Length: 509
Image (tube, rainbow, N blue to C red; front, side, top):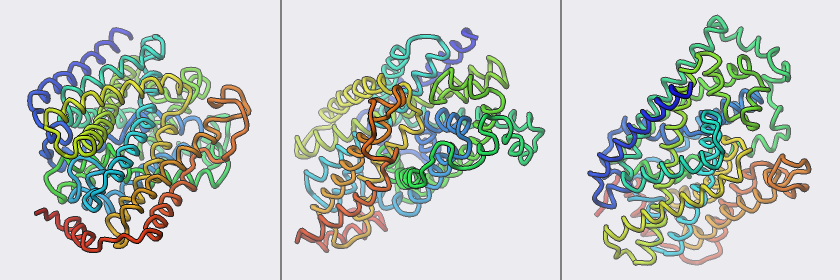
């Protein structure tokens, strides 16, 4: 098995390094580094978005969550998929027309304020860190399972590789790694789903009936309430998942890699089809793992269930299929973390260094150097955080990133595009209310405090009862933006008219 695994791993790693080498030769300007020069087609960007979105949380975390908790695990699939409708109908086109490299560029199309840009960059970096931790936890568990090496060494290996991709290849390398990975991931998922269906004689209704008896939960396995026993917690989770995508910086950044808004919209349609098919297939991954691997083996390999998909591949197709699936999962993580590092680095290098410190006068060379140093900083900090989050489900960790994105970014994006009176103070208070409330509520929630030792980071009674605070923090983000606007007298209605024209037509002077 080791020889097969190592061969497939090396093949994928070598392929991605070759892509990075050729991409590095074409990466000369900040536009090339941040957005691949805006040269991707609709289908290419659609596959790259799908590659960005189908992360370790989707492949490893959701399969594990469904395997262990049945219907409650499928909540993630539903939320992640529906979220694309919010992106497609409300955000994609205006964002592409107004922005240049980052989310802060889009907001600053209406407000020329350093404070707004700084807080938008801070929000981006916070979300990136949360998301990165999830991917690195998944990568650590995967490599630990396959090669029987220490978790911290596995995390370091992934951290070093992702940093190489970003430092040298920028967005072009990251995009092509994501495209290839999306195709490989879909192939692997379709093969496993087909094999699971074959085990159930291609009878989907029969599969659901049989699942009532194969787990220790009995018929409750197919009903909500196994994991999320508090209805408000379920609503809060779904709110984070559905609204969070439209505020995720590494997804939003993808709309700047195409030449116009029409291509941005077509890329979302392509991504939605790919993502939609994948999330339907997660049912077969989860059910298959529960039926043919079993809860005991899944939790023995990883307490959070993150290894359910590779273990299912081994149960159905032996070492060869497990090696392929694991190699694809590894490529999945590398591609996503490279995109995350890139969005975090661009927030620092372009927004904080280029626009605030250098006041827009930084040369291309200076910004490139700053972006590479920022990439190193984001990578190192994320690796250190991931070392302490080994026992957490990666789909759950990503849901926290979605919560911050939905609370801090989405209210300001929507207000910027659609509310005439919205102003600079409203943008600042909206982002701060959403960002701080999400972080504070998570830090006093059952994720951090639990009466049972080992169930959370600290032992103790949680102050805030919900595991995902979106139900409180998302409205606070909208309320903060509203109050900041209403209680300050500034208003630039002429600027709003200009933004409306640009957002809907893409016209720039």
